[in-house]
Image (tube, rainbow, N blue to C red; front, side, top):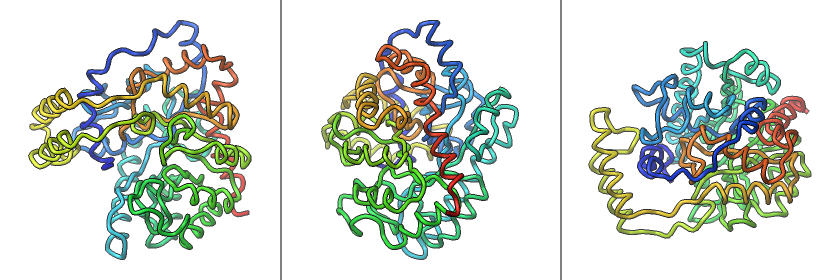
Length: 404
């Protein structure tokens, strides 16, 4: 999956998605607005890096966007972790340098977004700041890293990113890297878990007080992170394997181990990890030709974006793919709540990074999920934990235990 090419690529399907979610009651809206609501994995910085994108403006899924300030307000979303995502490239000295530079530039994008819009957003680095920022009428922005290849060439760079505001780091993405094995690398395991460097990464994260995110890590890598880390960890966007058997999801024994360590799983609304999506060679060929014509979606020039979207919509209409629904999302949440407990669950839409299901297409749909969870028996206290309390707790624990 080329994450930097996802949002526009899904735009036509998202825009055409039916209104799947039931209307939200007035009582649920009030309840939702009185919670601290956060998402632990916004890929929005990839959009913010595109010339002309304005986080203050209301966009649509047809624009290839699922998160912006007006829709956060509408969806009662107080903030979240904005991701420094680096595609896994070549390994070695040159590759590590390129990854480092990409990560630093993406960190600058996030900080610039906050600085330019200081009346709307505030950078947060401590768990307790979320509520204070929300009370001040602003949205909080935490910074995280997905795929820590930017620090693989020199782990002292972890301190640099920490100084820039990063408080969560995931070592691995969809391919193995110098830190460890991915859950989804087609070549299979390389280290049978973490590499020696990956074990040093865990120790340095603990020393700094960085929350470790094991999403995308192989099962053995997750086991080793749980064993080595002195602080609880998080899965910032992961599903339950018992509900849908995919390597990116976590099995029940590991869910219990995660909870026993005090950690949290943030259930992921990514369709491909929730239902079977059959291969379609004709569709793949058409998409390859589209990329050849226009380039990768976020690289499409402004004057060609409408033509790109029309061409993409035609491909989606001719070769449609099945999509998961909010029902699947609720099933994953309920299962994780049953196995790990409600003190150990939360949510990530994986928005602007390929996430979104029928009835849960962008941040305006957060209250619809609250409605579903209320009907499923979640209390106000349960929802306060689910929508932010649990994630902020482990963030605080990572900070409290730093250096130990």
